[in-house]
Length: 498
Image 1 (cartoon, helix red, strand yellow):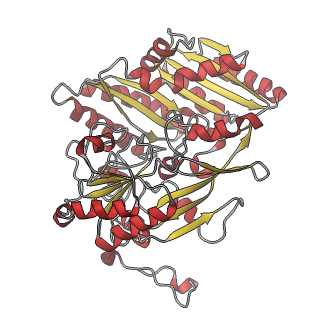
Image 2 (cartoon, rainbow, N blue to C red; image 1 turned 90 degrees about the vertical axis):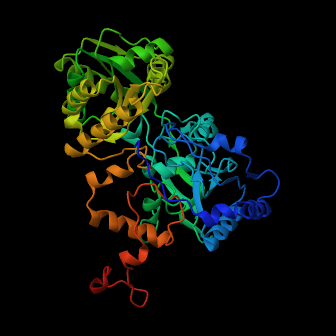
Image 3 (spheres, one colour; image 1 turned 45 degrees about the vertical axis):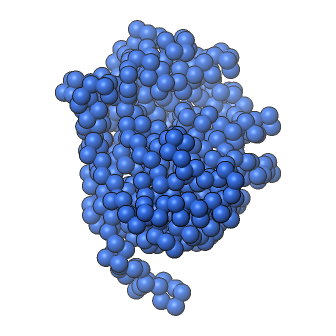
């Protein structure tokens, strides 16, 4: 990504900056517009901190009506818009553009409704992921998706990136836990998709929006599913002499029909970093550590623990601890949750990757990453959502050394190529953004990309919303053709003509 190319700045927009700032200030009065350079620096990057860019102007709306007016204003004048949540994205999804309005949704931070009867919460997009659980936990409920950044990441950003977390194996990603959204299209139109009901009518537009990375619309309200806390939850801490043995244990657990609440894996560098940081009680002599959480009725959990122990022993486990209290269970998870900042203590910089592979390929990919590490001369610490094959290699480098960032990027690109080669995908939960944008042809043909761009054109025909993300090369909507619907219907002969 060192040769990162973004859309060419629009000189006309840049020259009208003062006018645009004044117009936006009338839509969002008070302190809703930030245009001073020093103040905008807080928004110049997201979690992918290798790249920085000041936006044209920052605007912080507080109501859906303001978002609608901002987008309509920009659409009519051909001004680009980049939506932003909490800025914790790890793929450059919220990276600003110098000729684009940065639309920051952090003031949408209220929980609007808690409906235990329908087991859902309606929240504004700036509410943090953990904030939803905090609002319902006293009544015995929680929100299942739990990314490591859950204390800071926003639910709106979770929808944009289809975020997961350590418990997504059993309870699903954001897409499996969002029931509805209110969103604003680029032309200012406000629409609702889904709601408190379990299934929406018509096409699954909610499914298209979840994971769309801010390319199709701006979410202003989210309805999510909440779950009852399980009766019992216990975790096993299992150590292995090699990562390959740990990976095979993961495959065997799933192959036995056991679906843990969470199943995470860490390699030796990540284990030592996390233990030094958190003192979670991790065994330091092992090369791979598996955390397996089982939840449900107590009798069922006890039975499954015995099965998992036996599978681990067959795969050569050298240590196995089972949590005996809720405090100990949470301590097991504390190290994994803190793995990213922990690795930050052992390296000046690290590059966090995200790819997903078939579980059975985990030993092969781990071996491949070791070879790449030697090839590039850079260390890598690995933490995985092992149960669903979602990898998070952390490539350690020093940005102060010439060429190290470029090596880290090339290393990361090769890891993602390896993921695709074994039948996996470029991302599991971080999104494509700018980080993986130029690797999209590794996975998709031009015909595939054109089909995806047709969806983009249906929502944003002028490519004004978050341009430069996901697609390596945008094509004009007119070049792609339009879908024709006859008399408001789409009978078989008319599906779909381009």
